[in-house]
Image (cartoon, rainbow, N blue to C red; front, top):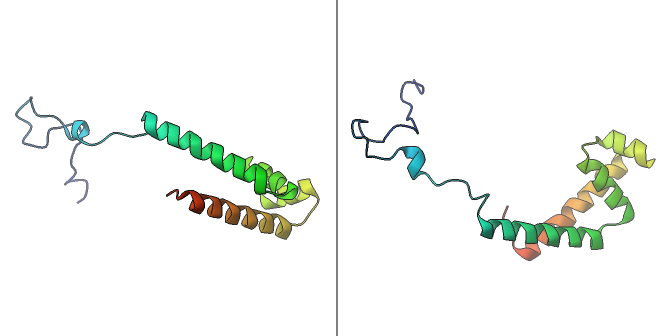
Length: 110
């Protein structure tokens, strides 16, 4: 039933007989990823977060975050650093709290 009642974005919202009407795709707002204002704000937020993490993270937390960002599992991170998985988990929890506090202080809405 949902497929039978679909609305095409490429056809005009009316009956389709008038070629001068614009399609739904023309009317819907586009992505804002290429908006210069959003790009500047995003780059400032990344710089701020990077500075915050550099300043606030311990050596262990920095190393754990680096490996985690590479996509390694908790177990592989633990093996690489010579610690147990709980230590990795605790470090990531501390990192998340620090990031949350930083974002809250900047009043950034995700």
